[in-house]
Length: 368
Length: 134
Image (cartoon, rainbow over all chains, first blue to last red; front, side):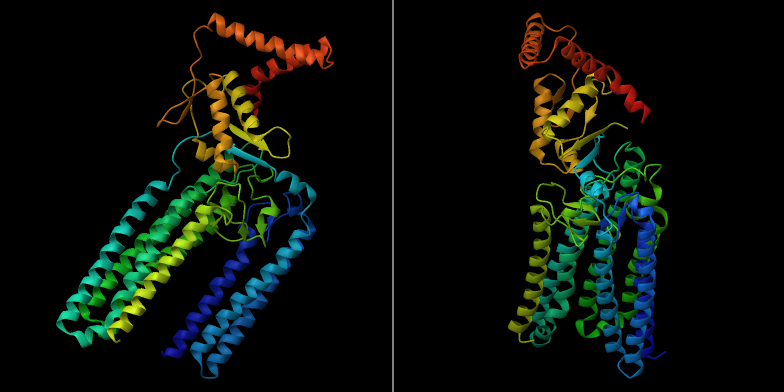
């Protein structure tokens, strides 16, 4: 099998995975939500909403076919990598445009009643630490320790190498330090997201909150656990690989191909398995396991269209929640009006930039 | 499942809505003495309101003797005093008398006042049954 065939195969699989998720999303959303807009539980059952959903399915299929034609067409013409990138960019851009178009249509269906309902919030009188927070704390501690230790080991190894073979070491700096840097920025960040997800706001339905609460708690816990698991797997993968690269020597990275594929494959399988599990068993926000409460109106900010930009970005300065349930997608999103959320996001970008800058500047100073 | 509901569209401030509902739940016996309540942070997060709003409601109820705020163990429902002290009882009755007098002065009839008192007492006693039905 040629490299071009493998690239095209991966591209085709990616189109089907992304397209498949886009196709499934409307059917696993909480009742009352349609393409990022809250239209109310009654309107969600009406013909206008159904027609909108049908239009979305057709739009997604057309987008998948066009993406495959663009990507594979360019690949057949002799540029498989360019075809892969162009086709993927076409798919993602198209999905964004399609979503915004359908969001705009759904907003027109939102009755005034939905806006009144948005003023209401419901909270259960149940104390205690949220489930999933314990594992998230363990993951955060483990990821911080492991990624810091790996980074320190990489810096120490580089200094030893510099003393032993200066010319060789200088050209290898970024190869040694880049992966530990990515590990240090990404793994603890994922674990932090797990902790924030475990503490995310529960969007309950009005009236009897029992079934809605249990569904929310189950959904929140599984999401937090997936983040914790991903953080631990990624940290283990990148820490192991960082050490292996130093041991075999940066010029021999290609010899690690099989190990990289196996470990990356494990993370991919973990993510895909859990994604399918969420979509099949829980639904977004626990929509598929809400017992007998799906007819009661949604509350707690998720129902307030005014607090959502394009149905994607939640902005409420008065809301102490750092994370809230997504309106169209799977899992939770940040409250961009909350200073803590902004701090978390900014810290991630600043740390990532600083670590990459150290790798690049270090290599240049070393003459690499 | 006991829940708190707030409505920002109402004129009543949110802290008072929270305090009123908790007071009723305690008075009706649905929240028994010693029951732990969610932390200020947790309740604020679930309701999407400022931390100070919930803290204010909790402090108000602590002042009224409905809740106990512990340093580390969180917030619990206070145990009722075996017998209200004579002075405390007199003070509460004075407050009730003053409130009724103000309402009477504002033009409410005796019948209206009797109805209000009756509704409030029934709400305290019947709150539990309504929630059980849910």
